[in-house]
Length: 129
Image (cartoon, rainbow, N blue to C red; front, side, top):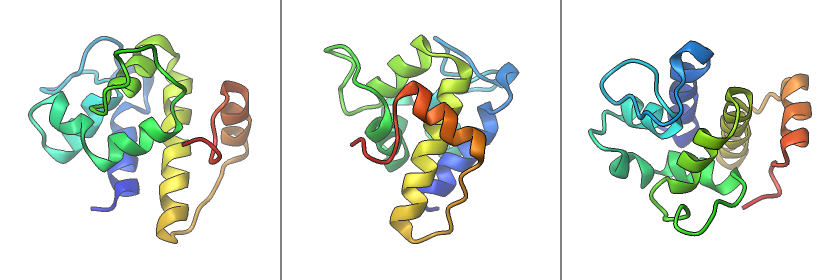
Protein backbone atom coordinates (compact mmCIF):
# COMPACT_ATOMS: atom_id res chain seq x y z
CA UNK A 1 0.00 0.00 0.00
CA UNK A 2 1.34 3.44 -0.91
CA UNK A 3 1.89 5.96 1.87
CA UNK A 4 -0.94 8.20 0.71
CA UNK A 5 -3.29 5.20 0.68
CA UNK A 6 -2.36 4.40 4.29
CA UNK A 7 -3.02 8.04 5.21
CA UNK A 8 -6.37 8.04 3.39
CA UNK A 9 -7.50 4.87 5.17
CA UNK A 10 -6.29 6.14 8.56
CA UNK A 11 -8.05 9.45 7.99
CA UNK A 12 -11.26 7.61 7.11
CA UNK A 13 -11.12 6.01 10.59
CA UNK A 14 -11.03 9.37 12.40
CA UNK A 15 -12.63 11.77 9.93
CA UNK A 16 -15.88 11.68 11.89
CA UNK A 17 -15.05 13.49 15.12
CA UNK A 18 -16.87 10.87 17.23
CA UNK A 19 -14.23 8.34 16.07
CA UNK A 20 -11.26 10.57 16.96
CA UNK A 21 -9.59 10.77 20.35
CA UNK A 22 -7.04 12.82 22.21
CA UNK A 23 -4.86 10.99 24.72
CA UNK A 24 -6.10 7.57 23.58
CA UNK A 25 -4.49 5.48 20.88
CA UNK A 26 -7.54 3.31 20.29
CA UNK A 27 -5.55 0.36 19.05
CA UNK A 28 -8.24 -2.17 19.90
CA UNK A 29 -11.31 -0.30 18.71
CA UNK A 30 -13.18 2.79 19.74
CA UNK A 31 -12.00 6.33 19.01
CA UNK A 32 -8.38 6.65 17.86
CA UNK A 33 -5.74 9.31 17.74
CA UNK A 34 -3.86 10.02 14.49
CA UNK A 35 -1.05 7.51 15.14
CA UNK A 36 -3.53 4.96 16.48
CA UNK A 37 -5.47 5.21 13.22
CA UNK A 38 -2.26 4.49 11.28
CA UNK A 39 -1.53 1.52 13.55
CA UNK A 40 -5.02 0.13 13.00
CA UNK A 41 -4.78 0.66 9.23
CA UNK A 42 -1.51 -1.24 9.03
CA UNK A 43 -2.37 -3.86 11.65
CA UNK A 44 0.46 -2.79 13.96
CA UNK A 45 0.06 -3.79 17.57
CA UNK A 46 2.00 -0.88 19.04
CA UNK A 47 2.19 2.84 18.60
CA UNK A 48 5.99 2.68 18.38
CA UNK A 49 5.75 0.48 15.27
CA UNK A 50 3.17 2.81 13.72
CA UNK A 51 5.21 5.89 14.64
CA UNK A 52 8.16 4.62 12.60
CA UNK A 53 6.14 4.16 9.39
CA UNK A 54 6.33 6.29 6.27
CA UNK A 55 2.76 7.42 6.96
CA UNK A 56 3.67 8.82 10.38
CA UNK A 57 6.76 10.38 8.82
CA UNK A 58 4.59 12.09 6.19
CA UNK A 59 2.44 13.59 8.95
CA UNK A 60 5.51 14.65 10.93
CA UNK A 61 6.92 16.36 7.83
CA UNK A 62 4.00 18.81 7.79
CA UNK A 63 3.26 19.04 11.53
CA UNK A 64 4.49 22.16 13.31
CA UNK A 65 7.41 21.68 15.66
CA UNK A 66 6.73 20.00 18.97
CA UNK A 67 8.47 20.72 22.27
CA UNK A 68 11.73 18.96 23.04
CA UNK A 69 11.22 15.28 23.76
CA UNK A 70 8.17 14.93 21.53
CA UNK A 71 10.15 15.04 18.28
CA UNK A 72 11.43 11.50 18.66
CA UNK A 73 11.13 10.06 15.13
CA UNK A 74 8.51 7.63 16.42
CA UNK A 75 5.38 9.67 15.84
CA UNK A 76 5.82 11.89 18.90
CA UNK A 77 5.35 15.14 16.99
CA UNK A 78 2.08 13.77 15.55
CA UNK A 79 0.92 12.59 18.98
CA UNK A 80 1.60 16.04 20.44
CA UNK A 81 -0.24 17.75 17.56
CA UNK A 82 -3.20 15.36 17.89
CA UNK A 83 -3.51 15.93 21.63
CA UNK A 84 -3.10 19.73 21.58
CA UNK A 85 -5.02 20.73 18.44
CA UNK A 86 -8.62 20.50 17.24
CA UNK A 87 -10.14 17.69 15.21
CA UNK A 88 -10.36 20.02 12.19
CA UNK A 89 -6.63 20.74 12.44
CA UNK A 90 -5.79 17.01 12.65
CA UNK A 91 -7.94 16.34 9.57
CA UNK A 92 -6.18 19.21 7.76
CA UNK A 93 -2.81 17.75 8.76
CA UNK A 94 -3.78 14.43 7.15
CA UNK A 95 -5.12 16.18 4.04
CA UNK A 96 -1.90 18.14 3.63
CA UNK A 97 0.26 15.02 4.05
CA UNK A 98 -1.93 13.08 1.60
CA UNK A 99 -1.66 15.88 -0.96
CA UNK A 100 2.13 16.00 -0.57
CA UNK A 101 2.48 12.21 -0.82
CA UNK A 102 0.27 12.05 -3.91
CA UNK A 103 2.26 14.82 -5.55
CA UNK A 104 5.50 12.98 -4.78
CA UNK A 105 4.10 9.74 -6.20
CA UNK A 106 2.82 11.42 -9.36
CA UNK A 107 -0.80 10.70 -8.42
CA UNK A 108 -3.67 13.06 -9.16
CA UNK A 109 -4.03 15.64 -6.42
CA UNK A 110 -7.36 17.30 -5.75
CA UNK A 111 -7.44 20.14 -3.27
CA UNK A 112 -10.89 21.01 -1.96
CA UNK A 113 -11.25 24.80 -1.59
CA UNK A 114 -11.95 24.61 2.15
CA UNK A 115 -8.80 22.56 2.76
CA UNK A 116 -6.63 25.32 1.31
CA UNK A 117 -8.13 27.82 3.71
CA UNK A 118 -7.74 25.56 6.77
CA UNK A 119 -4.14 24.68 5.87
CA UNK A 120 -3.30 28.35 5.43
CA UNK A 121 -4.90 29.36 8.71
CA UNK A 122 -3.14 26.75 10.85
CA UNK A 123 0.18 27.29 9.14
CA UNK A 124 1.27 24.23 7.27
CA UNK A 125 1.56 23.28 3.65
CA UNK A 126 3.81 21.78 1.00
CA UNK A 127 6.72 24.11 1.85
CA UNK A 128 7.24 22.52 5.30
CA UNK A 129 9.55 19.63 5.87
